[in-house]
Amino acid sequence: MSELSSLSKAILSFVDVLDSFGAESWNLRIVCVASAAFFLGMRVTIGHKNAIDWDALVHAVISGFGASACVYLNYFASAQMRGVPEPLASITCHGPLTSLHRIIPAITQGYAICDIINGFRLGPAFLAHGVATFTVAAIFCEHEAAQILTPTLVMELSTIVLACLRADFFTPTQQLVSQLTFMLLFFLSRIIVFPVILYDIITAFRTADFEQCFPSYIYYVTLLFGSFFVCLNSFWFYKMILKAKRKLSGQESMEVQEKLD
Image 1 (cartoon, helix red, strand yellow):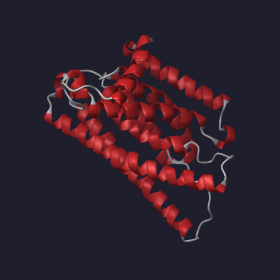
Image 2 (cartoon, helix red, strand yellow):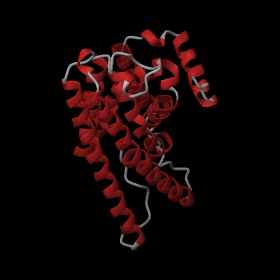
Image 3 (cartoon, helix red, strand yellow):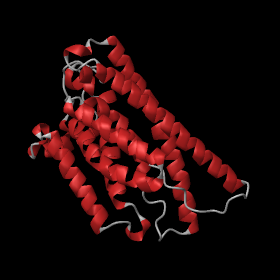
């Protein structure tokens, strides 16, 4: 068995810190409620200071980087850690690879309440995003299948930049750089990486006897959820391309990228 990489060891050291606080046995419903209270508290107390969406930023950092760490372990350490690669292990009764894998979706479920509130202000597409996120996270957490969902939350990496796009201290040049960075991260995390991860999960479902561990409809929920977000992400990216074309053609003045999360 090959030795784990330095990055894998660093991630696992962080997981050990979480486990020292009992993360491997935290009640996911309590994690969800606590997260909702925390993010709503941020919204009330900090709001959009300096034109930054602080609750979205903090959630995106937690879920985006947390999911990225889990994806790295899944693809480069899971086979060494327990002899079965991911995502196959997650859907065949092996449980979460680490406690980080199990708690991130519960945190996202709690934040989705803020997402839903944003949706009433920003429009149907955003509301659908919030409702879908909350529903899917709830289903996976309730069936102790959160580890299956976790890698897909790598999509939140793009939201880190999105939450800061309207920062009132950015110069015009910094605004342009942040917009381009957002489009690049959106393309990489949501248009490229997410479909690959989803494909691997769906393939594992179709080749494994997962019904001994989870109800059969978990597969269909995964397929429906994945298809929904592939379409939604494609729709948003198409809108961004159209906006960029209008700016380049001079049809629209340079302004901060419209809010998409």
